Length: 603
Image 1 (tube, rainbow, N blue to C red):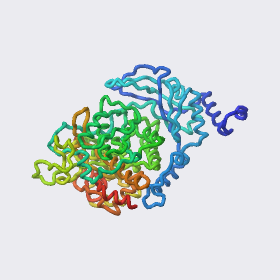
Image 2: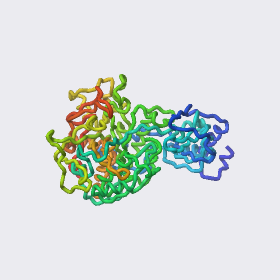
Image 3: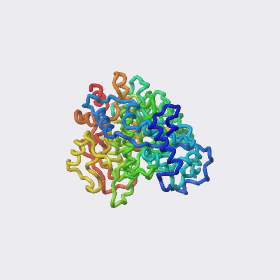
Image 4: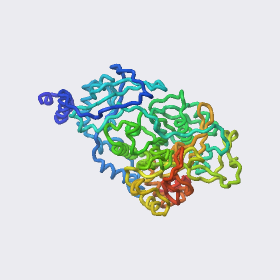
């Protein structure tokens, strides 16, 4: 107490006493166990022994939030198209003032970390990104860190093994920790490749998408109307040369990636990243495109993105995993999957209140999902997906183009302003085709859809969900899904037979990984129009999309043929059937850009 009275720097006595509690818990070694074990697949990872003392170890400490009920009220108010506060977006500091722990509590955490040797801490309001060494991290968590080499890539990571803990004096502030024990696992949404230059069907290229949905290609660029492609689990690769070649072949303006965030390695381009950057830029034309990689999962991305200024106004995520098994693919820090999803959803709310639109793929395994892709489960034959099932993102499903007449031997080429690529492949012609549900075995994937495990149906969606459930369509057994929860997807776009350029070659791919960046690019175009008129960005889309549908259904092309009972490999007995209006197969349908744009600009 004498020390507190004599301190020379700016700190009130309450803060000082709290820091002393931290010091006391440190000295007396009173600790709370956060995790008791950490397992890894020895077939994939080789333990190379204890990490050197100075080896870098970076992790995040997520702090307990406050006033979440107030955050909910503000979010609902500012995303409601009928509210006077609609699209009155907030600054980071305003949001942090609502939900972040007090400065005194964060001071206690920072003091503890600095005592143990941490030199750099990034304060994201309700989370701290910590840059430490193995020696400091071992002291912080009372554990040991080891180096692990991935057998098929030779990549080396540093993770702890066994139990880890924190001082009791900070346990009331810390919710959980990420980044010290997770081993990346190969469970994600992938784009699906088939043989390049297969002309049995017309190829989908940017000009086809623009013609299909009426997306303008001649808007002047707005350097603020940006779109971000988010990649996860250390997927860090596209080649700038492939992007340049793709843009040239498709008659697009040259538009290199505006900014990369996170690890980036173009040596071995990945189809997922390549697809994302090529088709987002193919829709947004010469608008800024960000490429953001995360060696982790949704929570790390969302919190880091939230704290970034300036940030892009649209995020496209072609990734997902079963909603109730999130802790299979990430370190939940002792939380359940439901608790993890809840925390990520709060991060999504925070991002949305900054005026950012979040979009996510609805999955490629149909209603069975990644939980039952081979139709083997008797207890959980259908599954949900996250982040696609989050009410705070716009979930995007997939359609495919089908010839209008069975007698058509080839799809008639659209000769108007054909890009160079259509001289060497047969490009699809929207004038002689129509959209149906994208489904195996015609396609390599089946568009995902269903109902969330955790999130109740939002008010903006309740009318269309109720209409679908009472329409008389065949439904899965009531015990297989929660009909009172949020339904997904919200919208769709064509997701079959996309032509990409990778490693200098043409490749054809399928997936909601195709349709999601297309919608992301389209939202960036809408933001461009709004910004040019001096209006705020769209931000969270869902309340607006359902309002547009209620007022003007023609804004969406209704997809009423097909179902999502198949996965990528099998056709199951259980799933959802497409119908008129919203359904958990293709959502509200695909976009009629001109109608959507007119509605928004005249609000």
